[in-house]
Length: 269
Ligand code: ADP
Ligand code: MG
Image 1 (cartoon, rainbow, N blue to C red):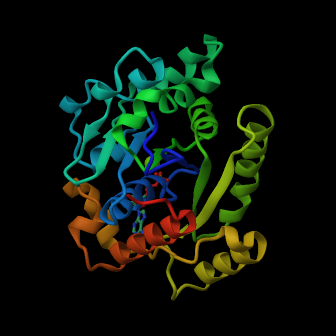
Image 2 (cartoon, rainbow, N blue to C red):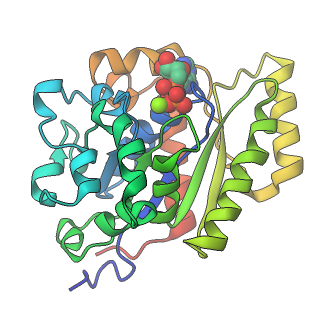
């Protein structure tokens, strides 16, 4: 039975952008931490074979016996794949390089587009009581990313505040449209969040203006500044919210969590 205090179950959000290094993993970790800190139960699904989200949250390789790969294959129980992190209310399904072969191996599977969907929409997930499931996608529009888009209610797009940032978006939007037409007609765009923003830099401001002009309300009011504490935190295996709670990066991710959750107005117990 679904939880009566969460009539809609978990909101599943794919954090995607086919460009590498734009802040997907950083956003998945720190938005997840921000949501957990305002009382939401959050699951982060590491869908990148590089496993950066797993490392960044301190899941060492010896604790990656069961991974997202097992989740996709569907032969391992959720109890085994879902792990707690140091942060209360934040859980993770870690990834290893196994996942890179999944992209190829799964092509012969006729349900290949729906593996993550079926895994995350199974009844047993209700027992965990997650409010949010964030999927950290790999830097490509491959089968893994399409699985995330098919499984998700929405896509959250980190956009690095640099030249050409908006150009990559059209390809991403095209993929979202294709997924809507084929496998997930209700897929929405959760929003676009500007990352690594430098207010002293004209280019950052120009990217922001262009994004707001072209995408309007889809762009989050919260902007994530470039902040060295954000980039240091993963090597201490913590979200920046714990590594340096008063840093600008930490404040921004808390604001993003609050902006996102206000949009949803989830029913609280
Ligand atoms: P992606 O997952 O899209 O490949 P990452 O989240 O791994 O991108 O970020 C790429 C690099 O940029 C990482 O080294 C990360 O620490 C750094 N980074 C991300 N966001 C910020 C930020 N707001 N300020 C400073 N460095 C950042
Ligand atoms: Mg990443």
